[in-house]
Structures are given as structure tokens and as C-alpha cells.
Picture (cartoon, rainbow, N blue to C red):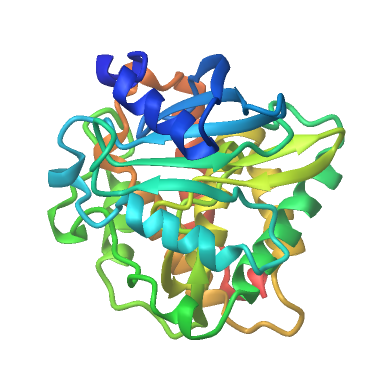
Length: 306
């Protein structure tokens, strides 16, 4: 994580926070949220002039050169998506205040309501955990209407024609096969509103119940299978391939016949990850699980996922 993401927010930004809650407000507590490396997130408790506490998250676009690397993943985009989702059944943060152009703050910034719960860690009941994720996925894909259709279209992070088999792998033929599939034209499949970065670390839980789906910066209009695929490789690496396959079973709609579409995006999402996989940051066990997941996905008969 860069030093900019670890730093305390500057006083001008903290003044904007208290001004957003109202005259006479004060920050009673603040702690940095260490998960993720894309934004600088701080959990705040602000007490207003009536003594009422407000549990908030200060979310800042402080990562150096994000405008060059991901110029369309903006604070304005996330604020617009969260306003859209406020009418849905999904547990998502409220937008308390927004400064997407950094008119008052040091960088583009959102002030969000803080949801209850914590990251899942190792769930006590894996079946209930996967069922909760599957239900959340169905609710995400149920979001519709003109506002949902107006979110930016899905795009890959990297051009597949420029990707290569990773140097750290002892199975280059596996990755050449995966990249060949990722470079092909996508098969037909349902499209709609997607989270785009749906994985366990973007969910919150309390006493075995899902209490939040967070980090909507890259929400898009695109292939529904992308959300399933992104969750599946994360589950495979963190909890095992059986968890990824069970999630697929639980989350697929009855009667769905888009198995080829799912297999394609399962492979694409992993290939899109390759430039960011640094072996020194990944345990060898996780890299092995990732390769076994890719190998199983490529070998899997299409009928096996329908």
C-alpha cells in the first residue's frame, strides 16, 4: 500500500466532513481501514451539535496516478451507482456527501454511511456463507431500469492480445490455452447491471448474515457471468475449489443454459488478473490453487456447469 493511502486525511478534508454533518460537529474517532489498496478509507465517528453520533466512512481517491491507470473509475461514478442502489434491496452504503471534483477536499472524496459488520474471514458455516453470496448476486443482477443501463459499459482491465503466460508458472501450456480462450469472441449470454469487483472482501457480515456489499467504483453494464467468475476465482484461492463450484451451483438461475458463457468469463477474469500477480506477494499454495482452478475450468465439460 502506498504512503499516500496510509496518511491521515488533511485538515481541509476533515473540516469538509464536519461541515457536511453540520455546524458544531466534531470528529470523535478515526481509524484507517487497511483492507484494499485502491482507495484511502477511514472509519469515522462524528458527533453532531445535538450529541448524536454518525458512523461514517471517508473514502478518498488518493492512490497515485489512478487518473492515468483507471480514469473512468471515479468518485462521481461510485456516487451515482450508490444513489441508484439506494432504491434496491441490497445493503449498500448511503452517500452522505460527495466532493468528486476535489473542490473542498485534497482529492476526490465520498463520505458514506458505515454499514454494520466485518469482512468474512473464515466463515463458521460455509454453506450459509455461499448461500448469502449467491442471494446477493441475484439481487445485484435484478437491478434494472434506465439508470442502471446508463452506467458505463464493462471493459477488461488488460488487452488479452498483450498478455503472456506468467514467468512464475511451471505450466506455461496451461496459460497459453487459457489466453487462447480469453482472446476469442465471447459467447452469447445475459447482460445487465454488474458489480464488476464482486468477491468476499467486498462483503460485510454480522453473526453469519450478510450486512453489506461495498466498493462500487467499477460497477458496469456488462456480462452477468463476470460477477460470478470474479467471485469464483476468489473463492477458489481463499476457500478451495469446492467452494467455487458450490457457489456456481447455488447462484445459477434455474434453467440457465449459458454454460459456455460462464466458462469463458471464468477464464477471462483470471487472465485479466495476471499482470498484477506478483509471486512474492502470493503464497505458493494460493498460486497452485489458482492454476488448479484454471485447469479445471478449461477441462470442464460445458454440460457440467448447466
